[in-house]
Image 1 (spheres, one colour):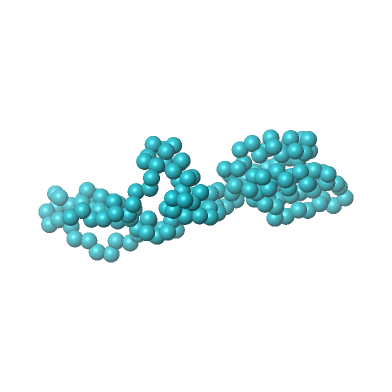
Image 2 (cartoon, rainbow, N blue to C red):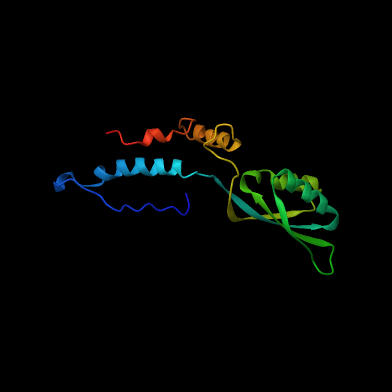
Length: 162
């Protein structure tokens, strides 16, 4: 989660000091925070690499093809002055970067040299709470991998039980 804060404005604690503490506040606060997250239209974010690739002019087309298959996109292409070498800068989702170097080298016959550095986070399009959405499938696979129930609990699970 990024850019989220919860401000507790008012609280009434137990009169006896022995019963006051985190055990009185934390479970209730936790339920209300989790319920608020579900009602706040959550979205997933994925990390994105900045990829810098040096290659000769005849390999540029192959690089574009590999980047398109891997959901990457080029935002800058410059030629080094006086040489046939091109510098290409692109964004590539980290999830798609596995095997990227091998694919790039295979497509360019070893002529392209990539360097990947983390650059930013971007929002994944789609609603993770909608069961028919592809983002929901991603959430289910992550929850399964972590040993959680595959379905996201409904907001009714976080209502006050009193």
